[in-house]
Length: 366
Ligand code: HEM
Image (cartoon, rainbow, N blue to C red; front, side):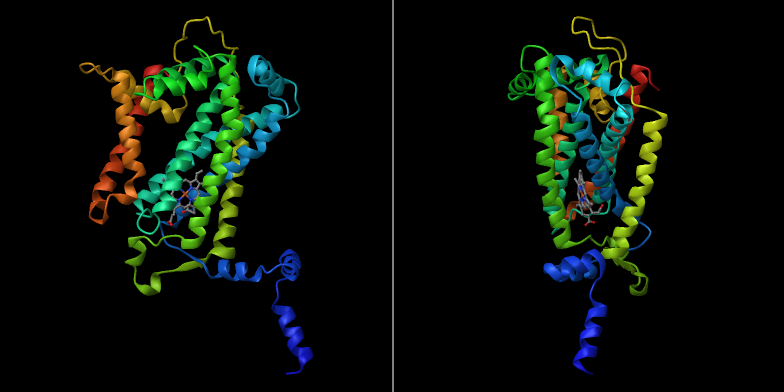
């Protein structure tokens, strides 16, 4: 073959378009080859592999819409009036706020689904301990994002629900009062609390999340997606795998597109509400409750009795702390305790669902 033909052949194999342009300038071919070599198992439970991606999508939506809300939102005394201005005066302000609030809830929902699915698929096993641990930190941070964001509109529900949350924080043994004091910025939940929650909501927690998420994704890229026992037990000819790039990624994007459509439908047809401005002197109105993902804990605290010198809130905190620690350490329980892990996780999941239903029933929403 002549040099000219060789040159033409190698040119026709090279990537074109943006990848080609970048490839001429930077050594990205290695990265493309690496991604193209990676494979994802494709079988009847593969659906669960999209849950992490959906959590990521809603996190990104929150960052974008959160930045837009920051153009008008003012923490402190003007918090409520600035949100009212966004909802009533700013063009499409109501829509951006609605998308932001729904995306926050959907993110927490999909992070929970993702966590339970990785536990049931035993993806926490060696060597993925750190992927699991970084994921667990992301779950805690996602809940922190929700809790800190809830107060920012400073409407009645936001204020009283945060007050309850602060009382619970205060009852955590030893560190509780210090933490609650730092968060409140005074003896009671007030305008200073909004500023502190604001700092955490727009800077502290998102920056931490981006760092931890980077580590989570890095571990995932290095180790690839796990192959569950059910997949490995299939006859070899039935063990289908798809390329991560581009097949799995394109499917991921398609699911993102469907999810974004769902999000827009929710935000447009059921716009996120804004209650009356909080009145710090008023007694707690009936039916005040936290976000849905704190409802089970809220209910458990309500029904727990005092035992000896221990108040019900202390007992509740011990139960929640221990359950969280046991869940976080699942990868280190040992190989012979996998069945126990599954039973424990089913019990936690059932507890969350049952106590949440009871809690909504008690506040009169179901
Ligand atoms: C903001 C929160 C989170 C995001 C954005 C996220 C994102 C992702 C993505 C995109 C994947 C790859 C696809 C998949 O398996 O779904 C993944 C895998 C994984 N995640 Fe997460 N994740 C989050 C939270 C969590 C939590 C709470 C846990 C568990 C406590 C967790 C544990 C894992 C594990 C073990 C894998 C590997 C799965 C496998 O190899 O089969 N992640 N994550």
